[in-house]
Amino acid sequence: MGGWVVALPPSQEIYDFKGYYQGPDDAEREPLSLENALWQNTVLASPGFVYGLVLYTGSETRSNMSAKKPRSKVGSLDLEINYLAKILFVMMLLLSLLIIVMDGFLGSWYYKYCRCVLLLCSIIPISMRINLDFAKVYYSVKINTDRSIDGTLARNSTIPEELGRI
Image: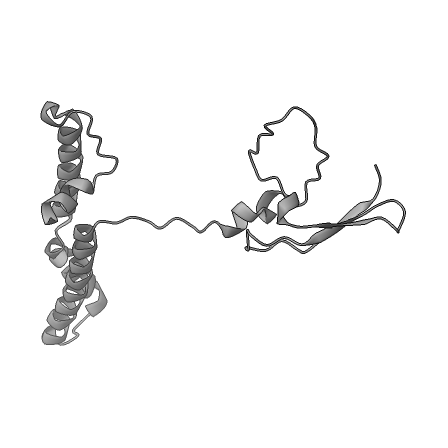
């Protein structure tokens, strides 16, 4: 069986396919459309055979081209704590600068600035973030092992905090 296939280049449109099969002699030309396509994991119900041709593979497959990158799921409490940590960080830098300005930029003021930043770094509560993460894990384990709600499975650690918000 000779010949060749001419088809449109790969695209994200999964329900659009146009092309044609050109037989060995130029007189034979068979149009190809979506009705001639067998998709990934297709199983033939009837005994027999099918002549097949693989047109697009790898990153050019329609399923790959139409797939979107997964979103990162972050709980709303995590977003709030991140926002507050950023505000506290900026406040720490500004307070250190204020202390240096009130001291009058005497001597090696940049060392004093770094010293002030180190002294004021306790403004940002890192332990609160760690405690929050441990609490999420603990509550998720308790939900998974609770016998009164048998069969429940917490698939991520943000479920307890989202349930608490409801």
